[in-house]
Length: 74
Image 1 (cartoon, one colour):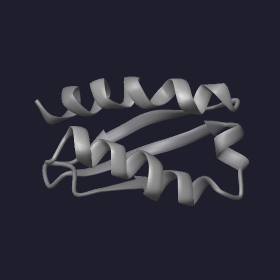
Image 2 (cartoon, helix red, strand yellow):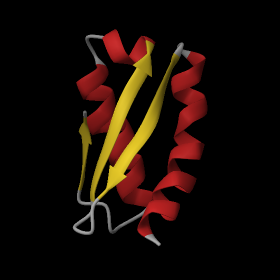
Image 3 (cartoon, helix red, strand yellow):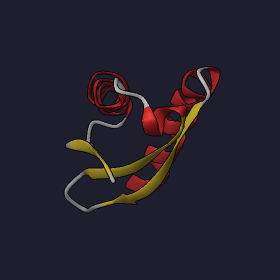
Image 4 (spheres, rainbow, N blue to C red):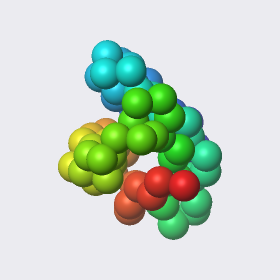
């Protein structure tokens, strides 16, 4: 199941976010590969959060789970 694969990949990403006082919460994974996450902690208010989302989280997720089309913050 796609959501399970995404959860496993996010578990590998989380420690890096948590080191800086942030985290993320998986909100939804659609059938067409759109992953919705909520950035929390320091990541929620960081001015670089969109860069982290696109160039960090999305890139790593797409490497681990090729079915992921994009990652959106909600």
